[in-house]
Length: 81
Image (cartoon, rainbow, N blue to C red):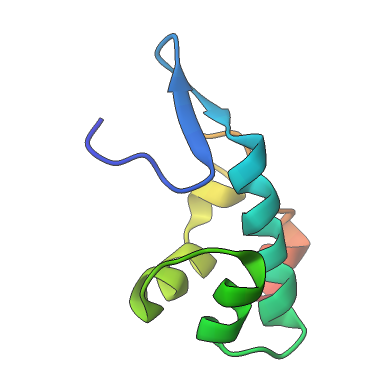
């Protein structure tokens, strides 16, 4: 696997939620929904990534549904973003 999304780790060949990063993912989605810009939402969540990476994170379906990755964000939150 070439790239593990922020918020996940691989243990024994399976994707598991990285709890510390998952908290930041939830904060990112919440901050963005509250009206903050991509950059400000990431800053509030403590995520240091470029603008385009944050945009990709907010549209990454792996955070809500995937056969390999367990969900971090609810479907309602994801669709609202």
